[in-house]
Image (cartoon, rainbow, N blue to C red; front, top):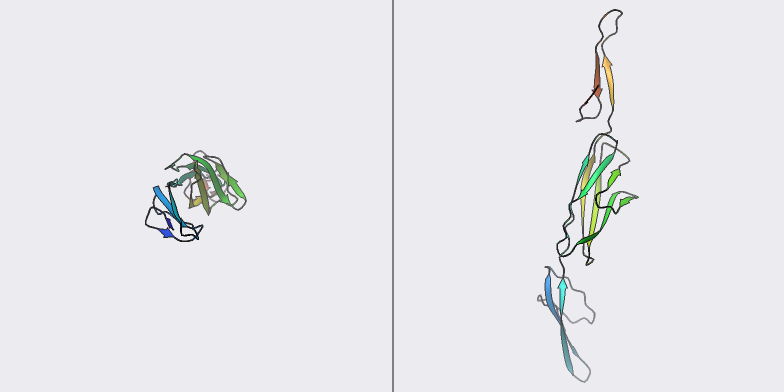
Amino acid sequence: LWTFGDGGTSTIQNPNHTYTAAGTYNVTLVVTNLSNCIDSITIPVTARPKPIAAFIYTNFFCPAGQVTFQDQSTGVGGAITDRRWIFEPGDESTLINPTHIFSVPDSTYAVMLIVTDNYGCQDSIVDSVYVKPAFGFHFVSDTVCFKEITHFTPVNEADGDSLYSV
């Protein structure tokens, strides 16, 4: 008979148990042999808290598709030792604060961050990352007539961007 210290029990020889809260639990195993002899042992088991995965990102209109990520994860019961960023199929990083160039600007990607602490506890987050359109412009002019003033106007093609210098 297993008692897991949180009210859970099992009579399976090699059970699995999931703790719903972090903490130290006294796990007791009581065994009986064919001669009806009984013995028991109690061992403390620590259910460690998981880290909390979080990130923020920034991107501009150029270079096209480039996004800089900043890990905002918190180690709750231990220190975060590993990170795995998944940007798009086949493109990953283990850097703390990576920069990635996405293949298609003006698109939204589901980016995943998986963090692992020094006890092996993991957490992950998937967030939508909008990659701004690439910088681009063209210009328009009014009708060009000989010896008359012609007006030229640059037009920014990246919605939400502004031209700094012309």
